[in-house]
Amino acid sequence: MARDRHQGGFIARMLRHRWLDESDTRKAVPPDLLEQLTRRIAASEKRHTGEVRIFVEAGLPMSYLWRSATPRERAVALFGKLRVWDTEDNNGVLIYLLLAEHAIEIVADRGLARHVPPEEWRAIVARLGSALHDGRFEDGLTQTLEEVSALLVRHFPAAEGAANANELPDEPVLG
Image 1 (cartoon, one colour):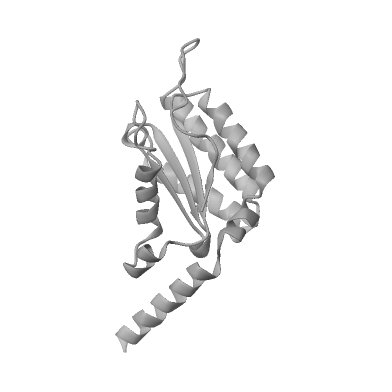
Image 2: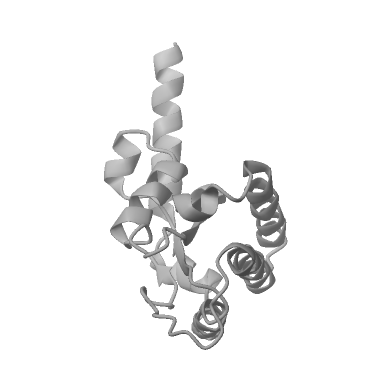
């Protein structure tokens, strides 16, 4: 009996992830918002030495569904794939949204993570979740980007007059 429920849960999850596609991602983050976020990330990164990436995807790939992977596992894998971990000061941050599960994950590299308590990250995620629940993608993502930027400025400010290399692309990734 429990196995049947587990299989039913797997099928429901798979359908939820396959039902949504890239058009849903583009509806959540239309071209004008994508451009605005790209500009905001670029402006943010002039104020600190960190790197911020945003990744929004409709559903998990089948390989993740087959092994019952969590949104956190996907976010950590993308953190590596997008090379967010590969910044000079280990202060990259990935903001990950999974539309099929209404999941939000923020993955911060160890340089920043050691300065920011988990409760602070959870509060940022909760505020973003509330905005997204209300359909305010632009407000939620903009506020989250500002909050993450403020943490980076506090702990890794850009030195006055020093060159600040842009180590990663600024444009959010839509999957």
